[in-house]
Image (cartoon, rainbow, N blue to C red; front, side):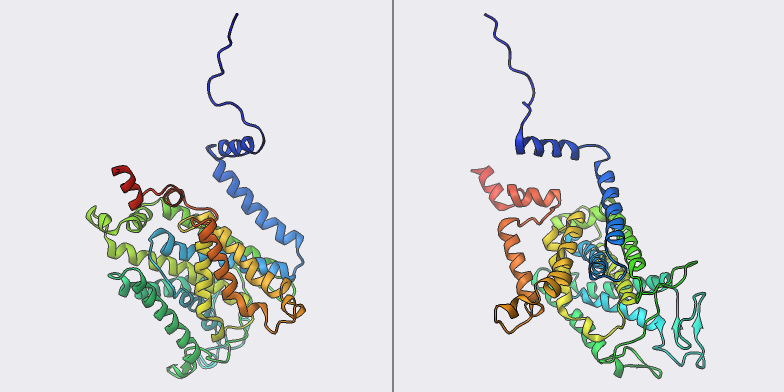
Length: 402
């Protein structure tokens, strides 16, 4: 009687297990990430433009979603890569937006004897300074990077809650400056409009193209925002794999060990704050062109918490996770709470609006995430191992020594 030997290697699975195994095998393919990323970006470019109307609410939400992705990617460099904390990220949104207000409106309306200063861009207003969109984004990134380094400098020797307090203070300073900027004079010109918003803002215009018209078609704004988000996505991947990115991760894991191995902690931390701030300033400049006016009420502490929630929800340090977290909270913030769920409290006989309980909703979501999936929606591989298997914690050392 012959007995057949059992087949070598793993036996094929069926059902859910087979699907999971096939997915894991697919992810191990050499160019899987590149192909999946290209398909995702292609769908993101086609679906909103073709499926939504030229001025629809859904397309407006999509524009805010790609803008929040830019903000979240910038904050992820500080919080996710370098392991620092920044509760004043709204300052860079304000910096980018007010750069647009200064250089794309009639805010400085008496410059050069009442004549408009035009640097190669079409003059939409008869007075003021009117620069091209790309030049304004560059200026916003430079100003924001300097502001980020200034904010980061006092935190170099601080840790934990102390960093949170200092960055929170700088965020509040930016809010107060925006609110009281009308009383701060540069010569005869006010720094900001204060309670009165700076308006109107020039329409976004790219070189060799006609100016956009947000009143009739906002699809070009979405495509520009998506293009900027893709560039920041590629920059994030490149930074993570660079020598600087590895230095950020080393500081996040163990600052003392990183310093002993020759990592210049002061310069590395300042570069993380400056880089994240520059990306936030670029996103703020784009949003400054999209909104009809730039007022002080836009720059509240709530915005910093919103962007930080996106990073935590997606997964600290995970680039694709941060993108998913930003899109998820953008839909909740701009569509569900403001549109879909808005009449629910009134139908239940409650006297409040869904926008008034935003903090409660985001807090509830974060609590659920901390209980069910503390590593985030799409965690970084290293952090997932730490959170799920306990590697790098005292519990692991204790079990090994026992």
